[in-house]
Image (cartoon, rainbow, N blue to C red; front, side, top):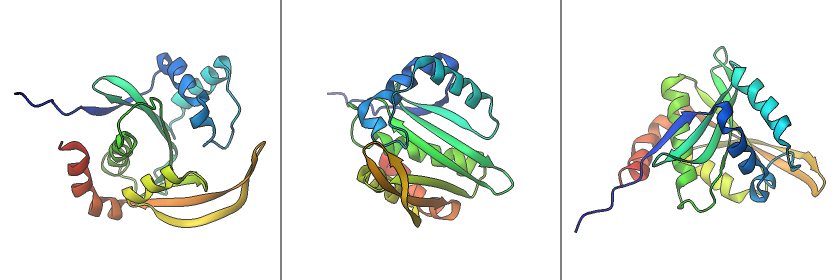
Length: 185
């Protein structure tokens, strides 16, 4: 009896050809509910945004592929070589993915930030009700930096935002065991 091979995960740069896929994911109800702006976005507006973002040297946009199929999206924004930090955002596109897929995506992204880009800090903001995202951040070693009270006004309410950060030295302390757990199946 042969063992089932472990899935392979990789990040690849987003291209304009990915616009429709990213928009479908962005407009999905579970994703919109965790965004600052919950409105559905139209394709022309999304394409213009993506074109601007792909030309922006202070941002990176990546797709997570599982066995060659796209399953998630991650972005780095406000990349500052001077201050050695960036801000990230992400979402899983395919809700049927196994538990841990998002954690794998973000671990790969943290590797990019700290080992390739050589930054020292990843900043993140999470709506206070998004318990799943807060758990993933905690698992990756993020620490709380503060809370922005009544920070986001949406049609469905006013929300606080948790401000989080992951520092390179904390990632390097956690990365070995975490990467082994996530990728050595």
